[in-house]
Every structure is written in structure tokens, then in C-alpha cells.
Amino acid sequence: MAKTKTVFFCQNCGAQYSKWQGQCTSCKEWNTIAEEIVQKASTSDWKSATSSPKTNRTAKPLRISEIDTSQEARYNTDDAELNRVLGGGLVPGSLTLLGGEPGIGKSTLLLQISLKLPYKTLYVSGEESQQQIKMRAERIHSKTDNCLILTETKTQNIFRQIEETEPDIVIIDSIQTLHSDYIESSAGSISQIRECTTELIKFAKETATPVLLIGHITKDGNIAGPKILEHMVDTVLQFEGDRNHVYRILRALKNRFGSTSELGIYEMQGSGLREVTNPSEILISKKEEELSGTAIASTVEGMRPLMIEVQALVSTAVYGTPQRSATGYNLKRLNMILAVLEKRAGFRLGAKDVFLNITGGISVDDPAIDLAVVAAILSSSEDIPIPKDFCFAAEVGLAGEIRPVTKVEQRIQEAEKLGFSTIFVSKYNKISLQNTRIQIQMVTKIEDVVEFLFG
Image (cartoon, rainbow, N blue to C red; front, side, top):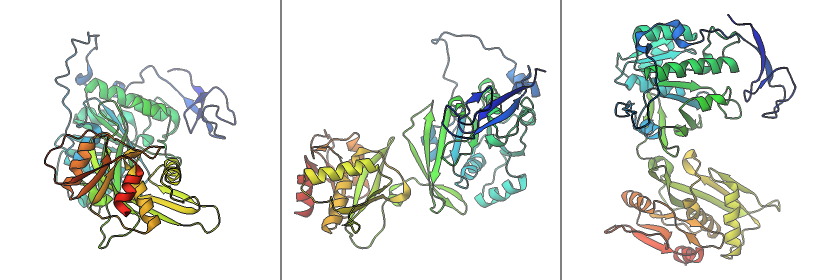
């Protein structure tokens, strides 16, 4: 056994120091450096707990032309939203990290998926007992015998059970509760998280078994533990949403096997998480009469077109200094659009409060919703409602010009499918669609839009 060594780690960013100091020079946080006793052994390997013949093979270098990828078929999770975000399913030997706020539904999502999988799945929980997990599984109403539940926190015992059961997929809830015998510090510390993740990576790569990890997050919204944790895993997923609302959004912050621009939407119900196949049903408000200050924008998240509702409220500033507030939209971009309307279109908004909201609780970075933001602001300012079957898909430039956007044909087809009669796009977009029932209104500057909407 190696000599015991004392190391100081920053509990915020994972930076390592040889002695204690008040401020971390890496993340600039104060009083976050703590002492940890690190004891390394020469047998610090997941295989030291088991001698499975499944792993007794020696890797050898191959030419890139000799590597066979035909056998690397993905595991279908039987969840269309998760498959979309992952890029088609779970890759054999991959490590996927799922992070999110406490109570957002991380454990429910992975338990629900493990109960639907046609593969043998080992669900390892260090936070709940087997009885608690059984109660949640009964609420989900799943009838399967492919899911094995294990309550354990020591990695050596987990690998011993993996040798006996030989699962196809392993789920860990959560990585912060695991601890290894080769590190003397407590569970959740920097060194324990790094050691346990290293052992799981070796196991996943050598046995081609997908491993899904649940990770806690800090008060700043970052995944707890060292930043190297996100570098070590193959995929980092973020589960977002407000616990006061029923909708949840799944995003990929990192994905070695697919795109990071895809989006998955779920609805939290008493029986688990429901996949939302048509996001426009939650992003567009249902109302009996037309109201001013609302406009529908056609945006694209990854390969998925979405119709979202933009709400604006323009009122006279009471305290002299006008307020600017945006929810789900970049505040700096809102200020830019207001300056364009003031300078190029002649609307006096400098002495008025402007509030902007993207419904559904999502954040949108797509510049194609600029024209919808302009329409919503002007509709509220003039108190004239926009017809509810109008939608917008264009970017607004600093000169007041209407700029083209990407994937405009997908946006038009989605608007047509949902029953919109008119869509406003830039005249400079090249559109080759034929026999469309929706009217495509070509505009070149803001004045054209104002004249068409408000006369």
C-alpha cells in the first residue's frame, strides 16, 4: 500500500494545492479549499473487485482503416425524446452524465427509462432504499422484470454485483454518493468523485457497457465536483425546468456521438414523465379572443421546428427611468431591437417600460424570433392585436433590414401543419416549396411589416 498523502482541493472547481490558502486562484472563490487524505493503491482498478472473464482481453493498436464500427449499434432507450438528444440512442461503452436541480425529476426519468428498456438494466441507488424505488416504480405503472435494483455506495461491491448479474446497461444514482476503498476521503469529495468516475470509465470502455450517471449541481447551477468530471464523460445532459411548472426540458451540453443542439421536452405527471411530441401545444397559449402584445415565432432547436409565443408589454414609465425586462430572451438583444425601432422605424419607446416573455418557460437564442419580438412590442405599443394565424421567422439587422434565416422551409412547413395562414420571412431567403397552402409574405425592412400589420 502506498504512503498516505494529504492534498488540498477546492470544493468549487476541483483545483489542487499542496497547502491550504484562503482564496482559490483558479475560480477566485474564498474559503472553498479543504484538506483530503488521498491513499492510492497499486490495485486501484475496477477489476480488482472481480475477475470476470469478460474483461480478460488485451488491447492492441489498429490502423484507423482496420477499425470495425459495424458492431457499434446503439441501444434504443424506447424514449423518443432521449434518443433525439443522445443522437439516436445509447452508444456501447459510453458514459452519460445527467445533471439538474433537486426534485426536477432526474431519478424519475432514468428509472422510467430503465423500466421500459428491453435490456437487462442494473439500477444502483445510493440515495433511496429498494422499497422507495419500488413505490416509485408502481406509480409509473411499469411491468418488467429486466430491471434490477441495487442499494449500494461502495464501488467494489457494485462491480461484484455487476459480475454476477452481467447487465447490459448500468445506471448510477448518484455519482456523489459513491466511494472507493482506495481513497480515504468521504463520499462526494473531489478525489472520491474522480476516482469512482475513473473506475466506471474503465469498466464501460473495457466491457462496452453503457453507464448513465446522475450528478448533483451546486447553487450556481454547475455540476458538483471537479470540472474534470464533465471532461471525462462522453455526454453531459442537463434537465431543466421549474418545479412549479409541469414541463421539463432535456438538453445536451456535450455529446461526443451527436449534436448538442437537440431538445427533448417532457411533462411531469402523477404517473411519471410524458414525452411531448408536439412542443407547440405547450408553447402557444390557448385563448378565446385576440389580445395585443402577442406574436408567434417559428424557431428551430437542432432539427426540430417549434412554434413559440412571444409576449410583450409596453407601458409608460412611472419613475422616469424606463425598465427593460426579458424572460427567456437575451436582454442585450432586446435593447438592440428597441434602438432599431427608435432609430429606423420612428417609434418613441425611450420613455416606456418594455417587458418581454417567452411562454412555456424556455430560453431561445435563435435570432429568427427577432421579427416576432418586434411585432409583439409594436402590437402592445399600438394596442392592436396581431391575427392569431400569423407567424414570423426572420432576423432584424441594425439598419432595420429583415435578414434571412436558416432552415426556412422547415419553419414554413411546421407553420402550415399547425394551421397558420401567413408567415413573414425575409425576401432574401431562397424558398423552393411548391403548392403550399400557407401565404408566404416576403418583407425587406421593418416598415414593410408595420404597414402590413397596422396599416
